[in-house]
Length: 435
Ligand SMILES: *Cc1c(COP(=O)(O)O)cnc(C)c1O
Image 1 (cartoon, helix red, strand yellow):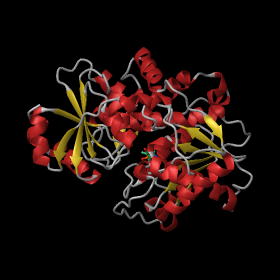
Image 2: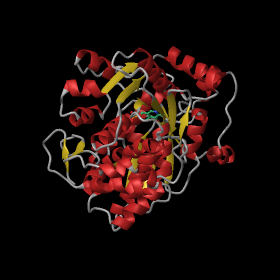
Image 3: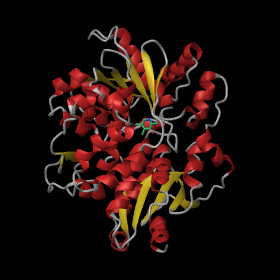
Image 4: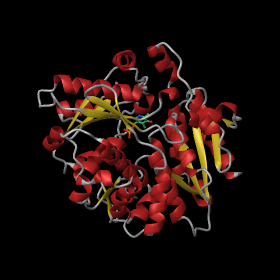
């Protein structure tokens, strides 16, 4: 399998090169040259396969010969070594819980797969690789955890001081080993600006082998397809599901659509957005207008120019009408988001996090109001983070405190270690050069 750049101005590369580069030299996103088809009888008999077998079958064509089969199976097994339960909330809506991984975020799967692939591709490399990540909360934890202890890779995380939740900060700052947390006196945008400048700085790039772990990397994007296969394995209804995905950079939903194009039954996709409504607007007007991001209670989706949206268009061969048939999108405000958390808790005793709540509201709205035959249909949401990661919003809405799940109990007694830094590139550069 080869990958081409969506800017069409770079050579095609295999999976190894696409994941080592992240972005093509022409700054385009890599896209698979063809969409492999999952065998029909595999889908029909999906209950008979283990999730490890599903993982290998789905990923193998994308990886091609760049990773030996036994190593790929090992990488897959380690990537998905926790549960992905599909839990019924109401008669018509279930929740695919993607927060049972080590950092309680769905990003664990992409980060674990990518880190192990990079470790594999770098296994004979003489030079260390340094991964730089700016995070507003969830990405940093998942990436740091994914890379923890991977040989030959150093991870440096920049996070805005005082602007991530308590658990998120502990997840970033207590790992040690090859993970270093920089606590930046500034905003997430400042952190991201420093990282971007670092990738363009000649001195740094001559001295250090820098890589990004951001979500456009194919090794982070492609394994997210597995969620949708795992959900289908647990799906009990005759009709294919309607799937509602809380979306920010649109990597997750794009992976779901890819799974569907490769043969997985899905009736309809809903891209559930918060106040950042570039895609809902696009589906109404056919005009794509990026905007500065707006802060919301579902902050992992505060994205004003979703980087993966261009891949979704490519999956529909740039045909607006086919996209509109298969995917709808709505924008849900903070009031409806917190009301949803409250109502779902009161009615069904299920605690949503703010991102899952956006998806729930969007799905319920679709099931109730859609003229397009959604009435009588059933669906599921992707619950992308554990509610304990957003305690203020959730506890306010449900009127009680949430317990820390087992995976993070140990954090409460762990010691925070961070390096405090001004939001200044030269300062950062000096520090990095002298390590
Ligand atoms: C990253 C994230 C999202 C958005 O996923 P995209 O793939 O960027 O659309 C949604 N919810 C949570 C909790 C996240 O961390």
